[in-house]
Image 1 (cartoon, one colour):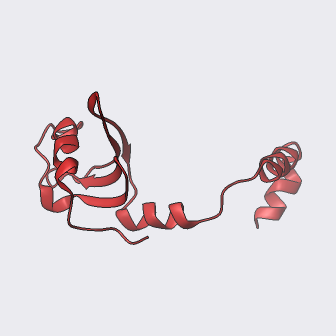
Image 2 (cartoon, rainbow, N blue to C red):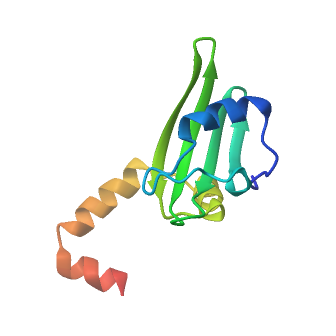
Length: 113
C-alpha cells in the first residue's frame, strides 16, 4: 500500500497526542505527516520533524473511550515502512536457522560473504 497524503478528521485528534518532536520539542508540520495505513479506527502514520529531521512512526487508535497513540522513534522513511510492511514475515524456522548459524561463528561469517 502506498503512503497517502490526505488525512481523515479522526486522524487530527490522534495527531494532537504526538504534536511535538520528542527530541527537539518543535511542533510537527502537518505537511510532513504520511498515513501509512488506515483501517477502521486505527491509523499508522509517519511524521518527520522539520527542525531536527528525526522521524516517528505512530499508531493512533480511536475508541469509544477516546483517542490514544503509541509512537516509536525511527530512522525509516515512509517508503521504508511501506517496504517492510509488504515484505514476508520472519518464520519460526527462519529464527531457528539463524540461531543454529550463530552457534558456529566461522560458518556464519562465510555464509554472509
